[in-house]
Length: 259
Image (cartoon, rainbow, N blue to C red; front, side, top):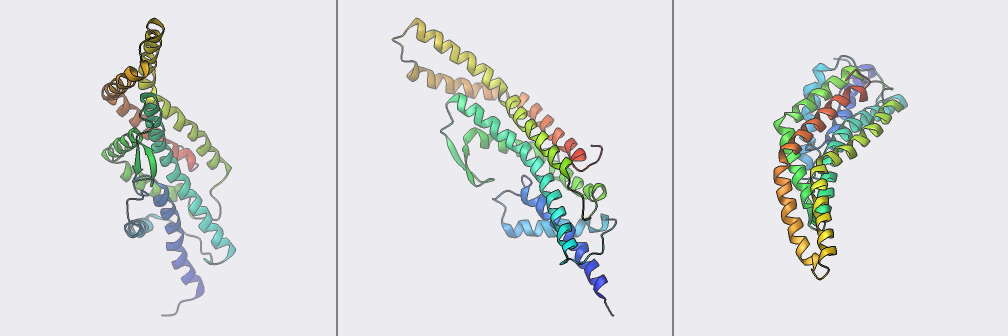
């Protein structure tokens, strides 16, 4: 069997370019890109996903992989995969930011542990919200929907030398504001409730200046904050559902589709 350079380039590019998009997505996406997952396991997931979605890719341009055009195609696929994974990363960052705001209001900002997902220290409540958001994400089959969006992305943005434009980055910037809004909505019940508690402490300090408000107020704020977290869990689940739904619906405009 004789093979020419065009056939070899088509075979290599047909696997290399989808591999670049899948690898970029898995590296940045939440859960899949967590640092607690060994690199070998992550590599096996990337190879398995790439091999699985190859039959769903309609066409791949016949370009020499080591040519300037081939390098440009690889860069485009990496940018598309990174943008998709980064959008879902922003959704989980909203949980971490919301937990940080609540921990600061409760006086638990100093209580931090090493986050196994990011490999850095984060407040305890941020890890609690991240773990809860991960369970909700898996319970809603978000990981399967993310794989389905990855397959659909090859139809909306096929493998080519063009694809990632300025509108794509502007969509990410706009959705970053949704991250801060989501963090505020998640922490809003605790912020409003603890604000009332702090105002009550201020009135108590004015009424009885001899009262040591620092020794009395801290345990009260901590206990009330935990009770507020307990009774605000239904609202948190509602906010998580809206946050993940907005993330999935934003993938369509991000890729140039209809959403």
